[in-house]
Length: 276
Image 1 (cartoon, rainbow, N blue to C red):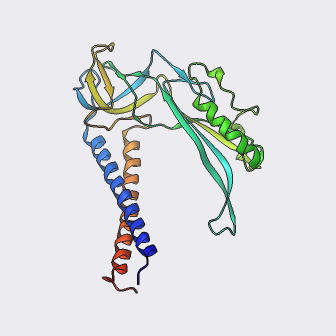
Image 2: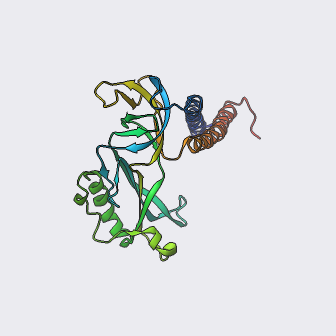
Image 3: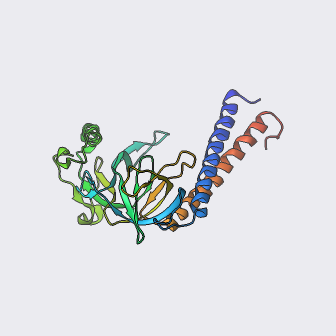
């Protein structure tokens, strides 16, 4: 006779599978939008959903927190080398875990050989490669527990207009390229990453173009009210599509497996399918 735990397991598999499968449909729809929207020149683009490619120009710049690079967008990410116990409690594992991330941006212009358009990046999905990476020796597990909350709080309060306002730690950040092989890794060591969009970077932008007489060229690209897809990437359309296709396949495969497993377990609990 099936127990309440058996039904909970069936429900968990079904809900997880359904969520992942639905996520796959959401990503698939976004993939179709990107694939179906033709590339436009800025001067001749129509109002509505558009795809443009252009170089970054900006009247205002901010500075990234670690390298102090002038940019229009940055995302920071910190990973720490941590040790955790296995679920059985019989062993431990060590791996790099993300302990914090954040981002900041300002409006900028995308310019091609026909003109330029203002891009307001609020609520955009940024697909950006990391450009800077740093390494910092930690002070073991206890030192990590004390340092990380202070570092995250400092980064949340970081003023990108005043890069001198941030003091990560007394220890210097060493560029990863200067740390050969990352020897002698120990618990509490940290990696700092910066994902940056700088002036003159060439971007793929897919968003909604709208007339705006308050802007220098009378048009702005932003997230639309009806079509929410808004992507800004330095990787190009092909790379964005390839990544989305991989995500869609993964969601459909694993979502389908979990969903099918949940349904089978439920039918077995109900006695409709005999247990093997």
